[in-house]
Length: 385
Image 1 (cartoon, rainbow, N blue to C red):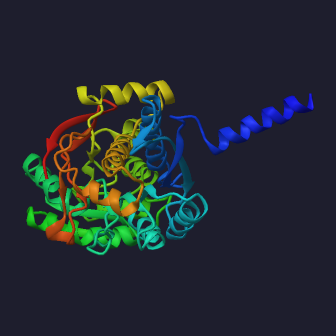
Image 2 (image 1 turned 180 degrees about the horizontal axis):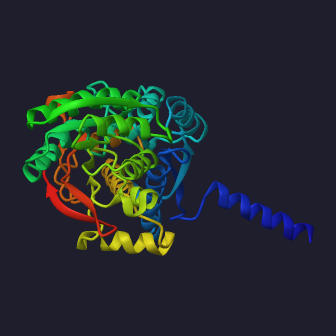
Image 3 (image 1 turned 60 degrees about the horizontal axis):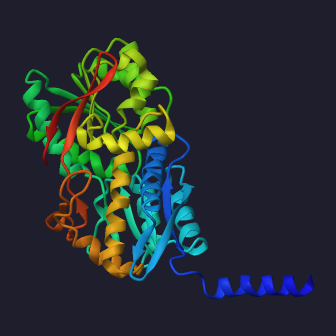
């Protein structure tokens, strides 16, 4: 019996030292997202988008990198949509989990905090936030996988001007943080250039629950367009609901932070006519395989825009890692830059940003105008920035 046990132990040890050919190594990806607070829906979408891409690559046999095949997994941490949360999550992923590739965070404050931890050269970060400081020539490993306000706001507001020629007076409600501070001047400029008058520019703390005094002031000022800027889904839904309850009948639109399904869930029938930008048309033929995979895994839960965004980002990362033949951060960043023209869920890859940010790490995509019609989110137009 003792001889048998010793033989078995020897075989087990040999397998550890010389694993069978084709055995998969493990590649951990990091996800930083708000899984609590007003941005929870965005965070869940981010996590699920990466998970779907991970499921797909593993089902295909894993990620082939040079002579090795990796089984991919994802580790997710909640940043609570805060700078401290971004710092803590990035530190845990990089120092504790050994992660080299991070999806998220969402929002300028946590993105900038996470990037500070990842610099210099500790991790590639594929994030979503509107601050221009997210992309700089020094941030060679930072990529933005959603359009930012300078890319989409002029086109969206131009669409509003063409389709609502009678509207003039605008009131902006924006978050009182780094996102709002960096975005509002761009919005104000775009509205003025399109012939609107920005009458009110109000800052609110994220997580505010009572917007009635603010909306009351806007009604008193005869505001015809309420702009929700980059408000989180929770905040945007409450603003829409309370504005309609107070009798506001003008346009409510959101140039940033798309989450139309969540707004409908919160405001119900009062969301009718709410208009926002969307990054993806889930009703399109191109979306069908992803939608089917999402339904199979998550059932009837709403699939917000961050699901396809981060699924697409993960697919681009996998392609860059394969091309690099390595998981080295510098090598993978270089291959991401070379993906121009590569087919993706959003069409051929286009990198931009050199003129505005000094580096071509801004993923350029068409976007969609979505509106609540008869209680359902409906894509009504497509715009190329």
